[in-house]
Each structure stands twice: as C-alpha cells, then as structure tokens.
Image 1: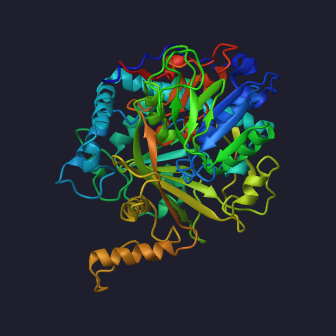
Image 2: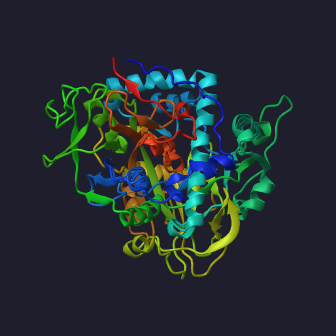
Length: 577
C-alpha cells in the first residue's frame, strides 16, 4: 500500500526557558530514578547508544544488542562529520528530479551524484518508497512542513548536546567539535539568493538566519577559497546568470552560523562510557533474528515462529537472537538503522525506509594548508566537506577517557571561545601540533539488496574525491594528484587502479561506504507501535542522522509526563492493512 501523507506540522515547538527547566532535556540534566524496569535496545550505533543511555537515566535496566563486534561500525563509523540544523532542506523536493534524471538517462555527462542499480529497480519496495517520495516532493506545503519539522528536531538535538557540554558528560573536545558554521558555495547568484531566501522564509523565525555572501566575503571567511581561480559572478540584463557561466567561477555563498562538525564515533564512545556507568550492558556480536509476539495477545514468549506473526494491540514483543535466546523486556526499542524495517515487518508494522548508500572520505590537509573553519558545501554536486582536528597535546576528558585512549584516531582537542549553536567550539586556527583533516561526503546510490556492510566502490569514491577537491586549490589536501597522466602509456582503467593504490598508501586517508536508512519525507521514524504495547522505534534518520538523533518522544517510554515537542512532527509509523 502507498504510505499516507504524514500529519501536518501541529504548531510551533516550545523551546522556551520554562520548557527547558521543566524537563526538555531530561537525559542530560536529571538524576536517575529509583524504578528498575527492563529495556532491550536493538542497535549499537549512535542512536542505539544514546537511547540506552536515555533509558538508563529513566531508571531502566538496559541491555543494548549490536550485531557487529563493537559499537558504531556502520553509519556511525565514519560519517560526514556534519552537525547541520541549517542544512535540513528535505531530499524530497522538486530539485531531486533533476538529479534522478541525470542518474537514469544514458546521455548525461559526468559521474552522477545519484545512481540506481538494475537490482534496485526490480524491487517493489523501492517503487512504493519512490511513489511516496514523489508525493512529498510535488507538494509544496509538505516540503515546507518537512523542512520545518526536520529543523526543529535538529535544533532540539543541538540543545541537548549543549546541555551535555555544560554538564561535562560529553565535552566538545571528546568528539572533535570543530567548525563554527557552514558555507554553501554557488556558481550563480540567482541560485545563491533563492536558497538564502528559502531558508529565511521557512526557518528564519526559528532562529536560523542565512547570510548572503559575495565571493570576496566567502574568501574573508575561508581564505583558502581565495586560492581558487575565480571570477566574480553576476547577473545578465534579464536577470539570468550570464556573468556566472565561466567554468569554475564562484558567485558567492550562503553562511549559516548554527552548523558545526565533529566525529560521531567518538561521541558514541563517550555516551557508551556514560551509559555503562549507569549499568547499561552492551552486548556486541549479538545479531537479532527477529521480534516475536504471542498469537493470543496475552504476552509471553510468542508462538509465531521465527517472525512471530503480526502483532495485535496489547501484545508484548520479545527479541529473538540468532543464538536462539529469547529476551523479554518491559520496553523494546528498535534503533537498528537499516535493520529496523525487517524487524518492524515481524510484527506487522511498516516504517517505509530504504537503504541509500553514501560515501565518506577522510582526507589529510597539507602541512602548509590553512585548515577550514566552516563546513563547506559544494551545492552543485551536493558534497559536504567538514573540518576535524585530530590531535593536540591536551589530556582527554574524564568522561571520554576510555574512548580516546582505545582509539588511535580519537585524541582530544583544545577549546577556544568561539561560540556555535550555544556551545563552545574547537579552535581550528593554525596549530603546529594539531593534525587537520577534512571529511568529504556525498553521493546517493540505490543498490537493492546490498550486502551489510555495503561494498566500497573505490572508483565511485574517487569520483567523489575529484568533485569535492575541485572546490579547493591544487595541493590543499596531502594526497596524490587525482588527474590521470596522459603520457604514462597506461590505459585509463589501469591508470585508475594505480592511482587508487597510491591513495590506499597515503597516510591519514580513509574511505568508507554505508547504507543510510532514508524515509520518503526525510524525517525519522520515532515513536511507539500501535500494534505492540511495549515496542518503540527510533530509526530512519537518513543522511543527517547525527544532527537529528536526540529523540524527544522516547523520553516518554514510561508515559509519565507529556512531550515537550509536538509528536506529530516526527511520528511516521505506518500500519499495514
């Protein structure tokens, strides 16, 4: 069945001081309650780890199940590093059709940002998902509502991070929080101005204002952009962009001071330490076979076989592990990313998520190159470049000490008085003892039944690297020349293989591919199943999952108090017919 349209945004979210004092941020500012009910959380990425910590502060005895041998190995392993409440314009908007056309039409030039494999086109689920995507993208009121809802959840998440900073639970240095804003770059003034206008129209009254910058102002903010060969853009006599048509020219950008960057995996490790201190048990290497519910609706171990059959209202779900163990709990929260859809189907729910493959590169910045201060977005190819500072001589914080000691790529960073989203940000000025890198992320591939983890296509990753590096001066990154030598005597395929081998041997360079669980309206699935009494979902966070992972409805697992955020903004669970 086609997914019905989500409920319209139901009023403004209350973010006032009164709301904050009365429980908006309970997981970060309240003490632990005395009740000891049990909870099982399925999924050990950032979402599952945070959910486990949150339930522990509510007084639950929590077990978190992760199929991999350690936490944060898929979507939370090497993400784009972007915290971007200002960049929450939904994927389901009219401009998406141009990207899809480039992916599907054979005469399109250049590597497409979006790709669809034949195996994906053969999936009925993709066509159901796509039909709902089109309905969302063609409805201006839905696009606007989704944009506002996504921003509200992102802003709430950043407020919770701010509370974690102030309490010392997860200081910014523990996860290398770095950038002090985002800078979207455009080659036409017309597109630049329209994007700024769109942001200010829809979320400007929520405290997120876009600033329009000309090329000179962009260079003032990011001096490295001044080393790119450029001519100032302009507009023609009839309002067209005749002055912007020179290849490589930048017309300017859009600045959002609310955005930042950091390392999601380090944040996950810091939360793990805090959760374990509250008694949470993390069981890695524990894949889940499915959810089981009793067929008589009375509770118990269930009798529906491997999947347990469809649930009925009032029934209770249990978790069946691949080992055969059946785990019962007062609350079961599915935070399994791409695995959530399959588990939901076990009880008759449909989340309408689809795994979309994306690529992330971590590139070392040259020793003589100035580190970025902002997240830079190449809006032509939809590529993000986020700065991170890997190491300084500072001592890791107590809350994240084990995380930073266990991981060689996760050392602490110093602090400055730069203010970003209400918290202090990492000083990324020239520091002789710091190692600066940039996370480059982008592309979207519909791959059908892709393996888990998905196959890393280094040819596609190389396309991403070339497109992203085109917005930076040659030699900015400490990597080999990405242009193939026409005089080498090698055929193109052989030359590219040789280049990939050189990149593999480059110190500090890492690449990663992961499937991102995406909904048609670009909003996550957060809330309680109407079919199963003790079952909750926290999934479908998509390509900016870290930005929107703090989930207010799950504060109410115990149903002890009303939500402080309108549930209708984020409740997108579908019941099958």
